Length: 134
Length: 142
Image (cartoon, rainbow over all chains, first blue to last red; front, top):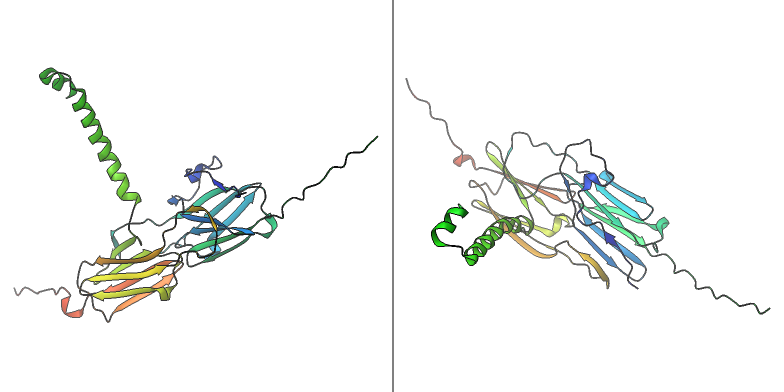
C-alpha cells in the first residue's frame, strides 16, 4: 500500500551521471523529510542559502533529481574564525514509484526549504475480463 | 612495535583486541561529533571591530527566532514546527522542535548596535564592539 520512494543512498553527487562538475564548490546531500498523505507524497528538503531561482528539479523517467545552487555571499573585511557548516550546493536524487501523477508535481522554495508535492496517480482501474463462451 | 611486544610478554590476544577496539573507537569518535551536531549550526566571522554570526535556520520564519545579547554572549532561540498533517513517514531527517543556543563571542558587544538579517533560511547577525572597549593605539613620544 505504501508508496515506494527510495533514495540512492548518500551517493557522491557529482558522479551521478558519471561526469564531473565544472564549478569547484562543495556539494552537500541535503536533509529531507518525506511523508505521505491520502492523495499525495510530500518532500521537504532543507537547502539553506538557496533562493527560489537557484533550485533545479529534473524528472527523468522515475529519477527525481534535486539541485540547489546557493547564492554566493562574499564577506569583505571579515575572516572566518569558527565553522560548523560549509557553504555550497546541494544535490540529491530520489527514485519515484510509478504511481505518481508526474504532470501534477508542484514545487516551492521558501526560507531555504524546498517543498515538493507529488500527487498520487489515480489507481489503475481493475479490468474484468469476460470469458467468451464459444 | 607489535613484534617487540610479542617478544617481551608473549602473545596476548586480549591485549591485541583491546588495542584494536581502542583504535576503532578513536576513529569513530571523531566521526560522531561531526555528524551529530547542534542545531542550528553556526559560523563566526571576525571583522576589525565587529563580529558576525551566520546560522543555518531553514524553514523558520524570521519572527520565530529570538535573539538575545548579553555581555559577550548571543543566544538564539526558536522553534521549528513539526508537521501536523496525519501522514505516513518515509523519511524524517530534518530536526524539529524547540532550540536554544548560546554562542560565546570573542569580545563584549554593544547591544544597541546589532543588525540581523534573514534570507533563504540563513540568519546573519552583525555585532559591534562598544566604542569604549575598542583597542586604542598609543603613540610613543620620541
